[in-house]
Image (cartoon, rainbow, N blue to C red; front, side):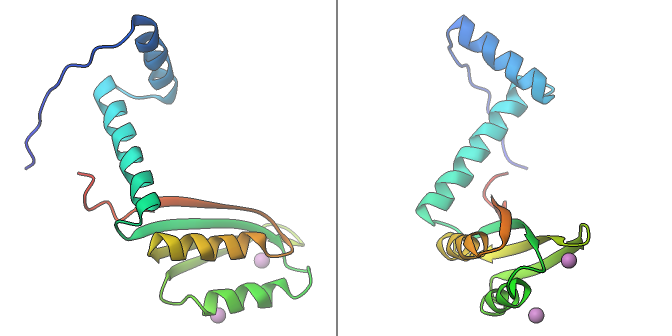
Length: 139
Ligand code: NI
Ligand code: NI
């Protein structure tokens, strides 16, 4: 078990009130849990910036499958990244629109470039890359 350390934080009273309102609205049970999540979030963004450890990500896209051979172009892109793609979930939303969630693992730069290629493809209406981590060093 990891050792738990307590530490004190000095803060302007108004800033602390704003922090308490923020974490209450998000449903945090206490300040410690909120601070831990913020620290983890900062570590994950640093990892993605510095490419210091492998990234895990979920790329979520919505597209019209009737648009100019888009399904074929998307399939080709994915077949060129079989090492990075762990799984793909496809949902037919309605007559035309498809939702796809692509789970990725690998070097952050590579994952980001793949996501940019997919999101910028003609016919993709919306796309978002959620960048997270293998979690090993976050405790
Ligand atoms: Ni395929
Ligand atoms: Ni579909």
